[in-house]
Image (cartoon, rainbow, N blue to C red; front, side, top):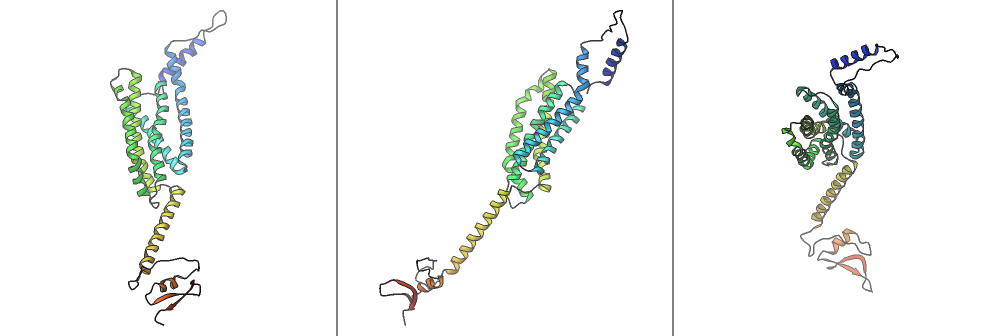
Length: 281
């Protein structure tokens, strides 16, 4: 956030110069072109923190609106926060200090970091496997994981040539975005699925209803198959089937009608009256 020694030196010089009084009661002003960057370093820390907080709030609101689950949106936001913290840690070992360029790149990097985790979180919520967290996490990785990885790889290929640049701005851009892609993929494909499999929320309500509907259909189909096997009689001349006629005959009467020894009784006009008599009687 700028050298404290530089800021102290600038403030000391300005303080001493301000004590000098000319005959017209005007004071001189201490100025060198280096003070431009030093003045920037004085406020860049507060500005960076404010911009990152505001950007994080916007990211959380948009993520909550699209994923429609509070707990999943919070976990996605933790992925973004941990990615930025890791980037700042690597910047220390690379000798990078917070300046105007890095502050701008970090705010842009926040938007890139949310992309990898948000897709996994949404896929986890949309997965439907009886509500089992482990299975849903696996399904999310299988369905959207390759696409997320390919997206990170294509982003890396887009700026990889900047690694051989001699410009300070391009070198900083490469280092920051290399960390964003690598750490974003790690938190999106490793960290987030693990925690979702442990403390992830339930799937969307529509998925639960679909599961119950599918189970009900399978149960009804199984019951129908069992009933068909039970109704099938080897001693009948025709396969036993469930019929519905205008006289509302019972199933037992219809089954009796299929026997070789029974035949339906009709009235004088030849209309089935719903009763059966034994042909041998």
